[in-house]
Image (cartoon, rainbow, N blue to C red; front, side, top):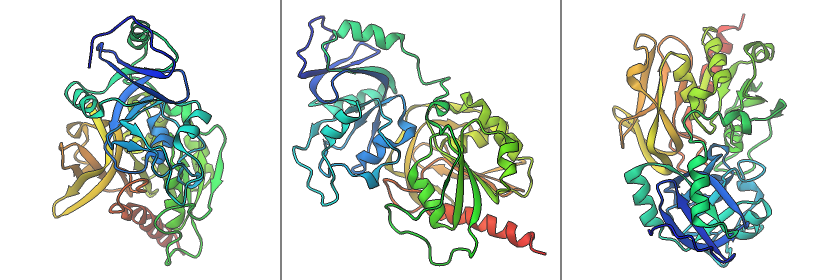
Length: 389
């Protein structure tokens, strides 16, 4: 860490400037340019391509704590979206070779292709300690010769994450169907699925492909709707269940999603399942509040649990539900994050509605929590049985 300097860097060099005036110097990789966003860190030891293509990272510069990126290259099967959603990548070092048999290209070239700016060769351990102590903070990665002082001015003028509705930026514009088998993952379709798939409507606040794959694997045929879909549009499809997806930004700013969730909660027998942002939107629709975490939960080894049960989970979020704001007569907090005690999952006491703060699709990550998809399918199976003449 050093003080700001007004001396321009050569084009092969790169700078990382934080809003508090911190300056780190490294080497450019990926695209040449300047990227502004919230600087966060991910502690996963694998899955960098899934992280970079996860729409939940929209608006962020991601620091990878694992010391080397690029070892396994990139491939189409590991993408969670058509293109990366991170604004920038921060790494200790970049592997000069991609050694996986699955590789279809190298990370550096892929980031160049998609216009994602990167910086490598910095002390990521020191940076992560700085973020842990001070919290996630706006910053800029630049490799185009912009001076540190000019970057600092841009960073300090950039909007902060609180109050931003980024879900509307990443959501699909048109409905589409998803019923294909898994492109990648730990299995394809389950052996004991229903004869007729469960008809699920998924609201896209920034949905990952792996989530859609897991819904299909658990016997669902999914219609994906935009984040601003109305209750009337959802119910017109006669869903057997509704899924509220993950996504970026501040959940309290996603007013259309909260309004929709309030309407869904008035359908007493309709199963509803939310993940991450979708879980937070459920909490807000129930009258709860959310707050911004200091540096967020982003990694693959977060323990979450209830009495007598612990799941090691994959997480990516910067906001959480305030447990004290939830109506106790309606809601049970079923899981806590065992690192900091924040709400990790909730369920309604008298309706087939639940949400989890973590990512049971595990892409990347452990598979402990995949049963939540089965739980959703079981709720739909019970509803189908109840409606059978």
